[in-house]
Length: 398
Image (cartoon, rainbow, N blue to C red; front, side, top):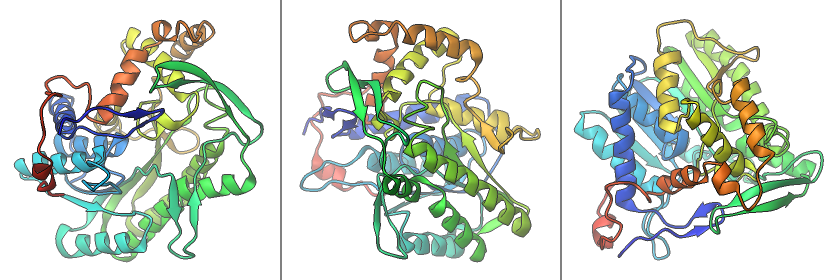
């Protein structure tokens, strides 16, 4: 079978297995050649198969510290209808590369919100893996089934106070279109918080503590985003932002518990606007990111996922210096994005953008290529005309 890219608006329906392998390899090589750090040795990552979660896993394993890792993710392998998600292959090939270096790289595929997966992972830590010294929560999900009530909650991307109008890139058609999103109901706001807020992170932290799975002075980190005024109404001021505020407030509560019980630490890392599977769905975000990419590249401060996470560990968390937080106790990895000069240049370009010139005035080409790379396409060194044997892919093990 020859794997071709199939796009539907902000979603890729296909992934290229060996393109995914090459992208994982490229990220590993970046970390090996970047500034190194000495940090956590035993790490649990929820949402480890793509985006920031995958970058975190790669950085910790290959960026100096040589960490053993457990990755939990909800991915799909080869079925009668699908040929395997990008995250499915990312897990497999990360494990291959890590084990060649003598590292433990255990993958658990399932619903991280469920009691079942929590029990399986905790039993594995207690019986085989050993106590963890870093727990990273990097979940982006469209829905969550509450294990206590059985009710399923669906997250929404909407403004909370009024109907939202904004320009959005249709990546399938390479067009700039106006988007209209109705204001969210209170039920939708609460449901999004249930899915993307801090409730599940807190539950994981509680269970890990109760089961004595955490080393003294361990840390736990969850990822968030704030962004600029260009995305405020649909992001920070919208349903997602409400959920992220809940996540950030949860960090303060977890920090108290971990400080009291293990002299540990819990905090949020506010990251830069980047192309991820989750961010591609957010109205206006695609155009903002494409403009931001152009400005940051021209100023020599652009970072992709792996670059940002490697900097987070090497220059901030494990730099040997005291960690600096903002007034709300958050680590700010969006420091370069929100520099005044960067945002002023973004605003100047934004005012000139039209459906006819957006590809010229923004770095749409770079944005789209990053999106394609998430799914294993448009990566140098990959033969996209190769006829891949599906039966061989089925033998690959998580």
